[in-house]
Length: 159
Figure (cartoon, helix red, strand yellow):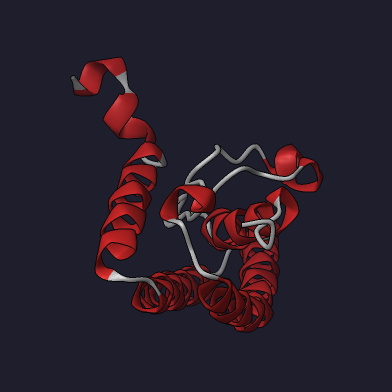
């Protein structure tokens, strides 16, 4: 299991969290032990992949999935940030154009939707690399992490 370093696991966590945080939905997060380079993101520790007992082949496949996901999600994150900046400028204009504000909001929502769908597909692809037991544990822990990102779930008035 030495193939799975904390840094690699942290990278997996960071990517999924980056997607969620950048699209502002505080949604889909994934795995484990966040490496010190990513701790500044304020991301919670999620899933420890070591608990899954992944084979070297599984680790290799998951690394490939992560690399492809990273390229796509970072691009969406940049689009989202750019659109949020555009939105802010529209609101700060001397004369606010309601149509332009609504169009910008729609574009932000489109990017968020695309990111959520991409992250979902990524998590399902990762689960497919795992055997039934590993997948069940992974997805169960992943679902727990999803709920933790919803502040209303843990608000005193929500209980």
